[in-house]
Image 1: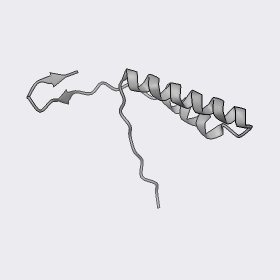
Image 2 (image 1 turned 120 degrees about the vertical axis):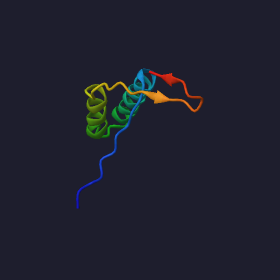
Image 3 (image 1 turned 180 degrees about the vertical axis):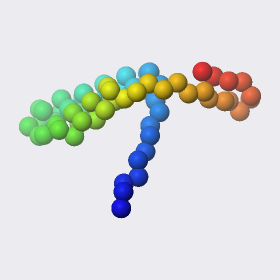
Length: 65
């Protein structure tokens, strides 16, 4: 059975926070002498993820881009 794929949409500030957190986790793992392969893969995916512009409609009827 195939694994279900999920997509995560984040803005620039959330992306920066995500990368900062992943680098912090990687540093903790290095200090503990543990492997960082999984965190390295996640950092690579976040850095190389395509940027997609989305249109979001608010409940009041106005649009945000």
